Length: 387
Ligand code: HEM
Image (cartoon, rainbow, N blue to C red; front, side, top):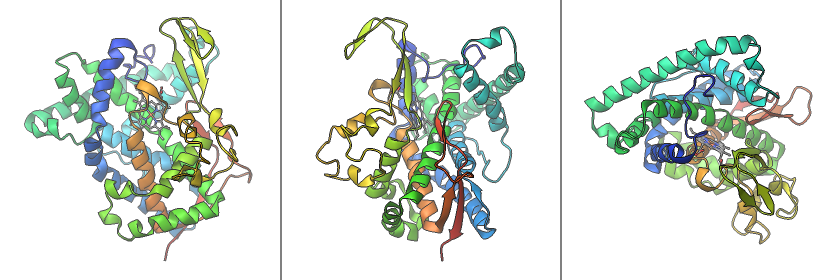
């Protein structure tokens, strides 16, 4: 990222810089702030509902992942920048257009067996600097706008309406220790970390539910009374859906979108009985114990009941081997926001539509395609509007 001219955010920082940035980012994800962002998420969910109503009316097949990505792009970009982003209605968003070039170019480099772009620049590499420059200018503009809003309305420091305002308020409290480049880097990090992860988790969940009719029926009945009055839906009500929670946990156990974590040892250390020298890159496989019979009876099956009270066959430590959001001091700071977005989309879907079918073009299970996140390939969905 640095080579490409992008400012690093909390995701790749380490040492003191990470500590400072992590404090700022955690302040932005404070539960009270996440609650304040909820109305913007509701607006984005209503847009997705309109799009799917129109697809259902025309009996059209929905490109599931593409639509869910529009939903998370609009949700996270709106929150990160404090600007209205609307890709669901097909309006081209300038930021997203540049990101659509930057992310694939970065993924390609991450996975390249050697740093080929030092020797030869392929098309995406040649265009990268222009896209990076455009994004940097736009982000600086958003920061300047947010600062101006906060000067005009000092209340916004106490009650920020988006992640950017919250980060700026937290940075003020760090007494100048957080630079503008740190803030810009973290706005970019939110987009990078928060879009594909949530969209792909939702896609896997919808596919797994459709294949498991009993679980789907139980989810529908749990969400029925919430669905009756969507306009009064709030974060408290979404927190009271234990069966949907169990389904999300089970989907993330079987299909974690981050099935591996990559860390670099900062000093010599020992993990278990393995000696690790400083600077060694450690690639940890997340989906190993989580599908192991040692921890889960019938480990390969989608059985959400195992997550309900007393449902883990007395093996409570099993919960700890499933780490879809990582663990320890670097655990995902966006996890509550992600779960909120997932539940909101699911309630909207189950309340308004009957899922007629979810399928892949070759009729097989969706292939797991791993770039930075693990995506299901080719999922299509057909909906019918509920009477
Ligand atoms: C279902 C959705 C998501 C999943 C499965 C997920 C998963 C993860 C994982 C596995 C990590 C690495 C944790 C570790 O190293 O121990 C991580 C880090 C991170 N995530 Fe998420 N994430 C999701 C959504 C989000 C969202 C919505 C945001 C923000 C808008 C976000 C922001 C971040 C950031 C900033 C980090 C880096 C934290 C650090 O290094 O201190 N994530 N996430």
